[in-house]
Length: 553
Image (cartoon, rainbow, N blue to C red; front, side):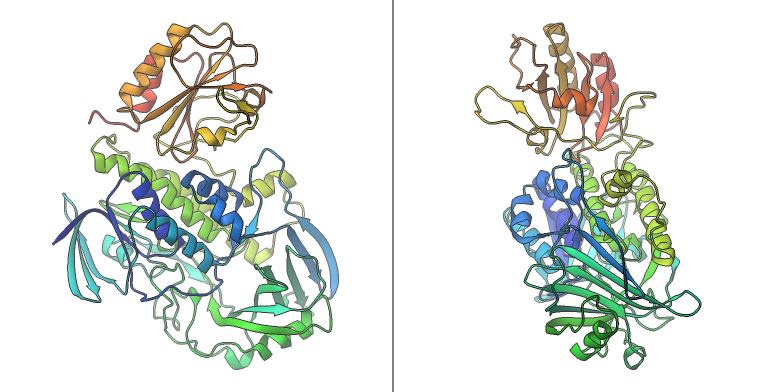
């Protein structure tokens, strides 16, 4: 029987992220997917700025920037008349913008990234059964070479809406389905609408209800879009019970009563003429000609949320834990961040140095995120985004997933009344840091890319050298050495006498972004969230915060 640290089930974007992050953190893992070959469908397309930050930390962002196209905004048309233009413009403190990237490209980039760690997806390998005991997980696999048994310390189910891992864990997946039936198509059109903008055109019946719909998301290529529309009557019958893959995050539906109705369906696929008919009715530019149909499908939408993200040694991420309408391109991005949150915690548990309850923090932190995303996307799918939804900057940051935070996490040091960013919030980037041996400016994110916690001391001319050293030594000891420590020097601070890596905040951008006070310390987790801020820092205070994550070992 093969023995490994972690078994990852499902090789969609979420499972690939989990496996790649586990390997980056030094964990031995296997990743299996029942599909013999990857799918080539542009399913999940939108990539949020926060996901770009995750890929930056992983070392993947350059490849993504080479392949993606900007998502600049959305053009709205209602009953043939143009509505307001939505501009997806974020302020310059955010390092990345909204992007569009076909899911098959995302999966290819993650697969290549994972291969760089010497780990390859075991395709054509299906999970048949999984059970756990106090010491680990036993999984039965159907592989091309025959049945296999695997013993793992943990298993992560990234196996979609019909997750076998979730069922084995005995977890509930409650929710409902939307009655509407839709179709998707990947096509090219010859209109002159501005590149980089999504298109949403709706038509209302006499009672004010939407009775026709066209949503177009730009893809790489000239005039290429992934289009979604209401399905025509001739395709609205039973779509078949086919499932489009355990790992892809799209688990096909069947008719009612055969499980969760969510995702791409089997059965008759839409033809180019079906898409052209909708364009003839709703396109904001006419005549318009659709061509080069790469793939198409019908699909249904459900909204469900698992009651717990983990049970013992079994964990869930992505569609295995939450499904919802595609409004706002939240699903894949939320799943990727599930995996990013979980991997570093599993790595500490595998090493035997995680604190008691560390793995429970995965559910404590990510379940409220899934609950909010499911609720918001359902509201927006049913009623649209209200015109008076509030401050536009806050709306865009929320859609970009930059406002996701864990203020109530058991790993976060309570700090009432502190300035933003508060403990539990995303650690923002800043520019203009100078380092002694580099003739170019650094970003703060350049210092945070390692797979460990990072401790930053904001040092000015009055900060005692000896105290910083004492605090750093105590923090390093508590974190078992898995901690990067930097002194961020104020513009007028002298070079320190101690041997500690430094970066000078020449323009005060770090001070402004963090509302940093002289001598204050900031502890940042491997997933880019602030675990605590300390003013003044003390060895005891830092050690207490770190013991929320690190055990004695």
